[in-house]
Length: 159
Image 1: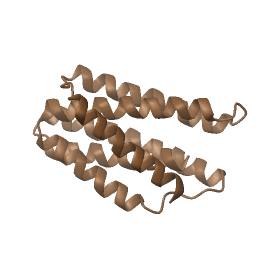
Image 2 (image 1 turned 90 degrees about the vertical axis):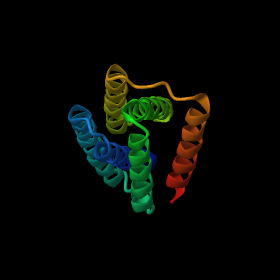
Image 3 (image 1 turned 180 degrees about the vertical axis):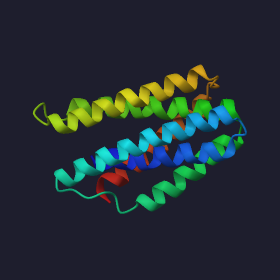
Image 4 (image 1 turned 135 degrees about the vertical axis):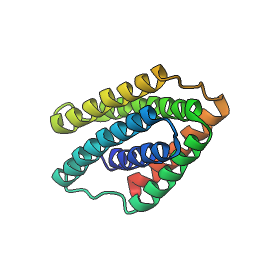
């Protein structure tokens, strides 16, 4: 659950970074609404961590700062690219959450409910970004995003 919590820290930061770099008021609203939904996920995962007697990642401020910078960079590359970044990010998060659901014990109903709800919201964010005109990102960029996510999830699991 710590990894999911870090993911929500990052998602919120990404959307805020994207929101400040777009000139389009409609997209800014989309990013801010999405960030608010990620803040809900952040609260859910924080509560679940507490219930499990676990702690959040000690590196959360670093995760937030890095993700905010990535979101702002994506936004500076233009709205279509920024939306494409959203689509790819959320699709990768969906895959992570699907894998987490497979590994969760069937009797951990509380964690399964949190992860399932988050997965549905992430899919909705990706679909909305696609509908708003997202550009398809090149395969090497998607690969770099996967590699960065692997570093984050591996590190967050431990620290």
